[in-house]
Amino acid sequence: MAEVREFPAVWLQGGSCSGCVVSLLNAVSPNIRQLLVDPVVPGRHVSLLFQPTVMAGSGEVALSVLPGEEAARGFILVVEGSIPTASPHYCMIGETGGQELSMLDKACELASRALAVVCVGTCSSFGGIPAAAPNPTGSKSLKTVLAERGISVPVVCIPGCPPHPDWFVHTVANVLLNGLPAADALDDVGRPLEFYGRTIHEQCPRRPDFDAGKLAKKQGDAGCLYHVGCKGPVTYADCPTRMWNSGVNWCVGANGPCIGCVEPSFPDLLSPLYEKICEERLPRLACTTRS
Image (tube, rainbow, N blue to C red; front, side, top):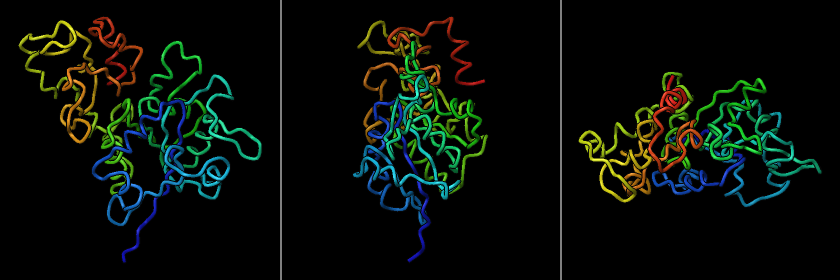
């Protein structure tokens, strides 16, 4: 039997709803059992050491499996959720030896020793809903926190609220096959161009309606949804072609406008979600998606 190389991974959950890991649990090809049990690619297997939602252990027993000092640069850190910074008592992931472990401190400690960091979901990637105004918890993206603490580590962002399971699984498979993505494989905010390289508007099957001036005036109308809040023109993702739930449907296909959940500007600059994009904001939105 050929030797299988193990790639240890640690998944921390911060300020989030756990929707990102739930989305991943719905992965189809490969499914979650194959992802956790079988090699993602021949001869290479991701060994998920820690994931609070799916692991059986809890408390200090579970925390004891987190990589210690001897595991320097020997694992991949996956982070779901924003990092609350307003108080050291926000977002505790547990305690050991009677000492509380905050998400802020543990994420930074592990990131400083990781081979790479994968931010799963918009909250981890850009702050997301927890960082929306007035942001009482001082939530920030992991990348912002690492920069503030002077921690240098490769970071790949897989945003979405939640992200499509393919975006995460295919990114992990690509890393196992080819190593970390080159700079030209990522956009200005660290997203893989393979999934986030074109706007929703470019790929939308309702683009001909927009070009023909057939625009919905209220929710439920046929036609392009730009006037009822669709953020497709400023949102970079392949939802129209990949679709969700095993290719069954996607937001616009269900007659709901794209809300721009993969963008750094979500939700503050893209709100109100069901109103036409404010024209005065367009230059600012462009600055937060492409330089």
